Amino acid sequence: MPVITEIEDLRKIYERRVPRMFYDYAETGSWSEQTFRDNSSDFDLIRLRQRVAVDMTNRSTASRMIGQDVAMPVALAPVGLTGMQCADGEIKAARAAEKFGVPFTLSTLSICSIEDVAEHTTKPFWFQVYTLKDDDFMRRLFDRARDAGCSAMVITLDLQVQGQRHKDLKNGLSAPPKLTVKSVANMMTKVQWGLGMLGTKRRFFGNVVGHAKGVTDPASLSSWTAEAFDHALDWDRVRELIRMWGGKVILKGILDAEDAKMAADAGADAIVVSNHGGRQLDGALSSIRMLPPIMDAVGDKIEVHLDSGIRSGQDVLKALALGAKGTMIGRAFVYGLGAMGEAGVTRALEVIHKELDTTMALCGERNVADLGRHNLLVPEDFTGRWA
Ligand code: GLV
Image (cartoon, rainbow, N blue to C red; front, side):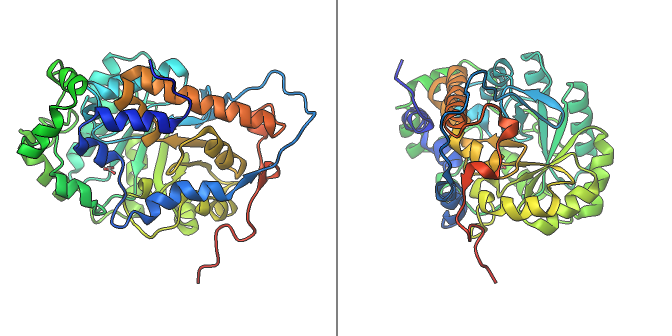
C-alpha cells in the first residue's frame, strides 16, 4: 500500500491506473482551462492566522449541511461517469461516504443507477439533476429518487449548454469507451481497471438508458445529452422544479450575487457557489473569489456551500471561514476512487479531514462552527476590481 499523505498522491496513482480518456474527462476545464486553474490557485492567495496557547482538546469537525448531521462539512459532489473511473464507482464512493459520515451526491449521468446505489447503501444520499426538456423524464427521475429515499435534490443550473472541453472531443469520450486503436492500446496498459470493468455489468448510463424516451442503446446517448438539456430554463422553471420535488433542494452553479438572490427568493434550501470545476464558462472568476460578495448578498438568507478547486482540508477551512456552511469535493474523491476504489475515497476523506482538523488547531479553533473571517488573512482586493 503506497503512503498517501495528500490528495496529489492519489492523483498521481489515478493517472497511472485509469484509461486516459476518463482521466482527461475529470482532469479538464473548458477551453483554455484558466478558470479550472484559478479555482485552486486562488485558495493559495488566502493565508491563515496562527494562534497559540489556545486549548486544543476535544476538537470537532462535526457540523450540519441542510439540517443533516455530517462528520465534516464536505459532501461528495455529483460527478458524471464515476462508474467509468473504477468498476461500480458510484456504489463504492457512496459506501465510503456513508461510512465516513458525509453526504454522497449521485449524478444523473452516473453509471450505477439510483436504484442500484440505494440497494447497495444503507443511508439516504442526494441526487443531482440537470434541467432537461423532457418533463416526463424529469418527473420520473424525481419519483425514482423519492422511491430510493434520496434526502435532497441538487439541481444543476450552470449546464444548459456544455462548455467545450478539447480533450473529450479529441479522445472521443463515451461510455462504454469507443474501441479505437489508440483507446484499446491505452486500456491494455490499465490491467486492474480492465479486470474490474470485465467483472461488472454496469457500463452504461444507468439512469438514462432504457428510461429516457428514444435512448435504448448507448450509441444514441451522446446525441441525447446534446439535445436533452433545457435551453429555455428560467427562474419560473426553477421554482416549478422546487415544487415538483417537494423536499430539500440545493441549487448548484451560482457564481453571481444577483443569481444568489434569485435562488434565495425561489425558496431553495441551499446554493452551491460553483463554476462547475472550471468546466463550463472558462474566463469566469474562481468560486472562492466569488464567495465573499455572494455571502454579503445572501449569507443571512440561505445556506451557502462552495465547490470548485478544493484539494485539501485547508481549502475547506478557508471556504468555511469566509462563511460557507459546507463544501463539495469532486476531483479530490475521483482521484481516490480511480487510484484505489472505495479505500481510495476513504483515504481522500481522511486526508482532507486530517488537514482540516490540524489546521483548525493551529489556528486556535476547536470547532468548525467557530471558524470565521478572524482566522484568515485575505488580500484587501481579493475579489478584484472588475469594471
Ligand atoms: C458534467 O456535469 C460534466 O461536467 O462533465
